[in-house]
Length: 142
Image (cartoon, rainbow, N blue to C red; front, side):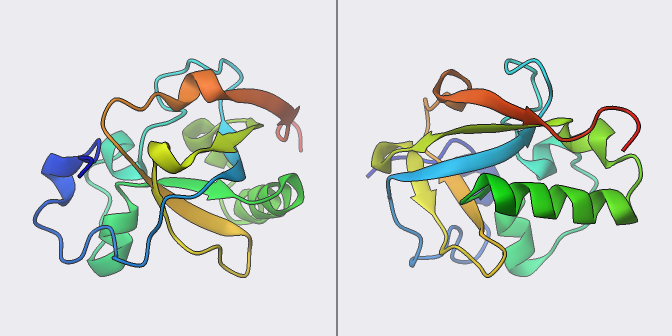
């Protein structure tokens, strides 16, 4: 059995990740900073901001990585986030990167109606080398 990258953080959370999460191969799109090696690009939200208040399944997801199944769904979500959070670019980045999630990278949730899914990475996985910048979604004015 593969161990999860953030095993210590999730071991005491009930059913985390949920049993229905599966290893899959699928294209993935993620919000990132312009420098693909930026330390926060592939860091779960609860490690970037440990004081963030999440509970239940949301806390479990907070130790996973958020992705989208298409560039269009990622763009749509980014623009929606920008409407409600003018400084969101400071926390999640200014670009969208894409890559391929492989079965041995971890386990993923089902894709929701917004095209979003969560990946819980296995130990030793480094996604930085598998992703490249696709487009800039925030240029400082939009």
